[in-house]
Length: 124
Image (cartoon, rainbow, N blue to C red):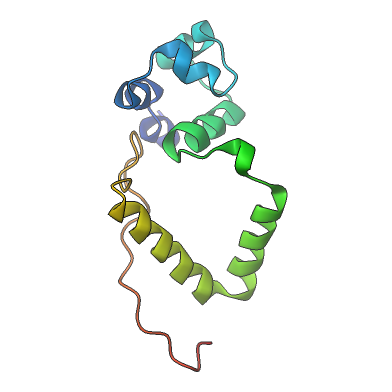
């Protein structure tokens, strides 16, 4: 069994979200019968796994995501890695404060990072 298969258990995610198979699988373009087969152990194609992760684990509304968003993220990671890490920690803290910290079916959230240190003028 591959690591990703252990981490993303579609049946467990679906049950924790309180959805039936049709509700769960049609949100990512998979039929109920196809989803049932994946839940029974058939290997999911990578695009289906990624859609499942984005929509049901990360709870991302794909209709709101644009290519430029990913370009901005890539730019920040490359050109301003400290700012990127601070923003990421702030977003994680906000998610935790809203009670959205532990996403169903995802074991670990890349580990906790230390709290933010005050930014010095040299870092700006």
